[in-house]
View 1 (cartoon, one colour):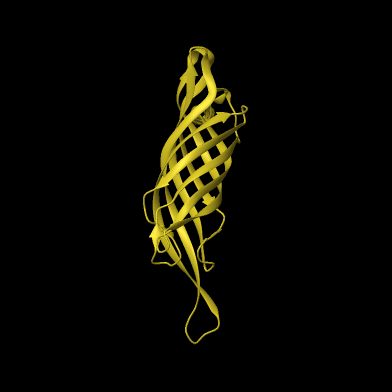
View 2 (cartoon, helix red, strand yellow):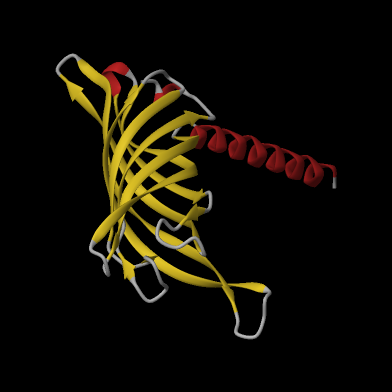
Length: 215
């Protein structure tokens, strides 16, 4: 009985130690980031054939997952970057009764530029995302003075391409072009819809730092 107790104790201890070691090893290959993006893009009004500019502020949470590293100077080079994001409400430029917010998630590849002297602080980022575009429409029904709201939900499929620089081991800035392919954005009425493309300026701050992500 005593031997069984000792064997069980050692087994549990070894399992816990191995699990902790494995988790610490995995943490060496990922890092978490918080970010803020400012985007600016045109929204077309098809009836009058003109564009109005929309600005959007977005908060992001992302994870950099190491895919390859350069052993000769112990640094990450290529990363897979899944992320989620959400925006503040935005007023439609053509109709004050229309507002929208976006909530989405996507996947980017981030590749640092390397030269003969080694890895630089500049990187290229490319990927895509799916945006859930939630519109709020204010309206007053006939015979009633009370204003009501209803929602319109659209999906947008977006590609991203950008460049950036790691300004320190803990922060990076980037600029990005995004192109949506679905007509998910309302113009002056819910019936008039268009695609949306934008240019973004972003700041990303690392929450966790380790040797594999030294810039």
